[in-house]
Amino acid sequence: MLVLNDIHHLYPDGESTREVLTLPHWEIADGEQWALIGPSGSGKSTLLHCIAGLITPTRGTVTLDDECISAATEEVRARRRGESLGYVLQQFNLLSSLTVMDNVRAGAYFGRTAASDDEITALLTELGIAHLAGSRSDRLSMGEQQRTAIARALIKRPRYLLADEPTANLDRDNTKRIIDILLQYSRTTGATLIVATHDPAVMAHFARQLQLPQGGI
Image (cartoon, rainbow, N blue to C red; front, side):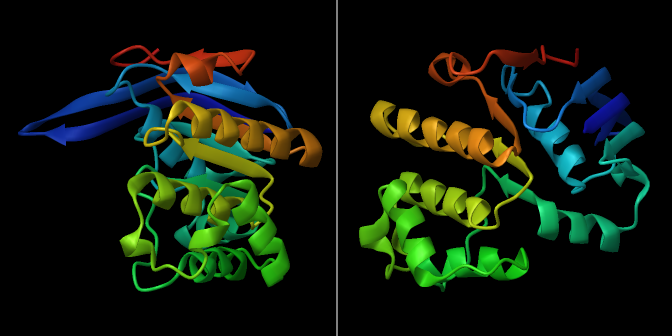
């Protein structure tokens, strides 16, 4: 289970600070699928960063499987991200000098997951980018980079899958394809899925939704 309690996060704003996220309490049971929705600037990415342990909330606790991630050392948080968490960032963070295949291989390596080339190829085929396996990631379109980042997250077989606007650079057909793949992965593996989005077409696929209005909840 994932439990967030009394979450507040502030960013410096000149000589003062600005609160970008307020979340009193949120519990997510194993295997649930959630859409995290709200306008730009409502704190969706900040909340996902807190869950992933990439940032520490100014106040509050993030507990993952009875382990308080928000109070853990960076070593512990990095281990958690590697072993059980897949995260599709808005920036993708692909290794530009590597091919699509090697970027996905790197995801498996850092996730300590054994993945054969056949498994990677099957995943790339499902995502519609198998023909790009030998292409360098810096020569891909934004949509192709986005799907490569999704493949890199999925190949780890994470128990928690976080996706920040995973369809932002995709057309309608590929948007449906990606959301179907993420939901199917969650349903077949029992992984927890949280997708941050402001796209109504994506929201429609999720029965559970958390609304983050501007300035917190």
